[in-house]
Length: 225
Image (cartoon, rainbow, N blue to C red; front, side, top):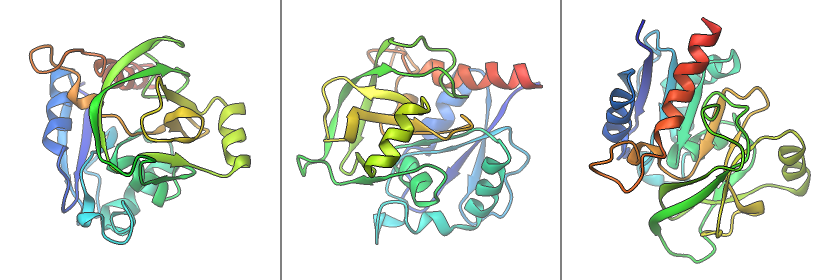
């Protein structure tokens, strides 16, 4: 059976079509989920894509967190459904308290758009099991508020519990401990600032290092089905 992955669209979302295309190119079926829906349409996993949900008013992700679809997503995530938050999606997950910490303005106070090198720190998550620990990958980064912060206790807990999944090589935005992506303790919810959906097609990007994000999910679901 084909894996069905929901892709949520909020007002201001920009990368939902890219995420859906990446899902399709990596062998799964994308399912469009509107922010005003109160159902997840029976999907196997959900992606919160990048953009500027609700214009990033108040704080990035702060309004989106209260969308009707998020009520269902929070319940599903707490029950173990795989969820991937990319860029603005990571910010929404932090606002929803599905992931700890917060994303602040880049230390440079400028919007950053570039190919960014990352190091894989953990494969113990639904979205990273197809990688190897220590593997270096290149993924598109494009954000103005990607500076990950958390208190010292939270950072230590993330490190101790192997919840840092991806780390920047050459920190672009000031993120604490060079953190580019983290997971919850259960490993089913992952948030990261770079955009793996832009690195799945060799005709459109310099690497296909984004593919394992999506094949990791399929592999996990096959194992638990």
